[in-house]
Amino acid sequence: MKRFLALTAIVGGVLTGTADAAVPFVYDRELGDVARASLVHAVSDERAMSRADVKRVYVRCYRDKTTFERVFEQRYGVPAGRVVAYYAGGPDLHLRSGTCDNVRTFLGGRHTVYTAGAYAILLHEALHRQGVGIERLTACLANEAARWVRNASGSTRRKRFARAISRSPLHGCSGRLSTA
Image (cartoon, rainbow, N blue to C red):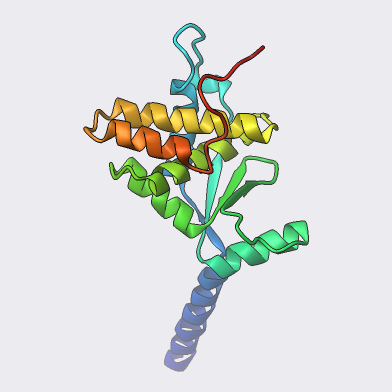
């Protein structure tokens, strides 16, 4: 009986470890909540929005580069190349591990072009989830929201940061968004 219990414990441990290693991503609930809240708060005061007006997003943070690229290639049939995140329908946003790390760093108060870019990428994909399909528009809105959050933090490096992000390749528009 003791041998059976020992064997069961060993097999169970091996299977559990294998099952955990096979999971290609983890859901980051905090990033999903932050993306949703950011979209709610980024709306102008004249047009109030409630949390219920914004669809919930679930953020998949892939465990490593190889896994992200393999999943992307299986889905789209092309190499991931320089893709750092994507939205493929449904409630899930797909982000590389480094992108998730940079968003967390941004939220922790370290505001650089890279961390703000990662935060803007998160919002960009969350906007696709809301139904915005135009790439230039999602990039513009996401960057404006990232700039708004950054400016609200009151850092003394605000102007330098704003100049850097406006020159970033992620910056989808210049000046105000025109609806005309």
